[in-house]
Length: 268
Image (cartoon, rainbow, N blue to C red):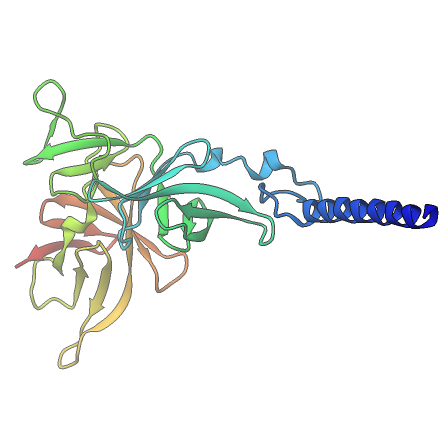
């Protein structure tokens, strides 16, 4: 009987030990709440979770489907279209891919996000340009409306929400929404001119040249960007040729000075 009780006691202790061991194993393989655990190398959670470099307003390129995206210092973001918030979420560093991802709080989707040559790129939403220091201005018939004589748009007003709404780096600049340049612009206002420029509703442009008796040929194309210090000045950035950009000055409502070529006029 002593041997029997000794065997039972030993078995019970072994069973308890196995239970304790299983609990320890479960704790070891349980998923980590912090995705940055075990970064390795010189990386720390503080460095990979510092999203202050994204903070601010970023304006969508002319051919972007969205107007702007805004970040706070903690990496929380909101995406805008036509003055409405169409998505929002947060940033998180993923050690497995060694990259920052933007996650949507609406559908839990995620896409890689990164800084590239001063631009913000997201795999889901495209390219954005820095809007630091820009103001929301409201123009009507070419004149600025201020708080003294008219209501200024809400800070969430979209730059693409209307013909009278503009972005500007200071109140002396009238940087129009380039989508308003939509149409066909002929050199020197001549409908039969050798060169002309087509600008679509997104602000994308194509430069054409034609020879007598031949079909017009697209010589270049691209999108617009804004001057940060020159009044009514833009840059036609080529997507066909690397590093090529033309300075474009808005001479009047229906006339653009395109690079060194001369004046192009918007013709009906």
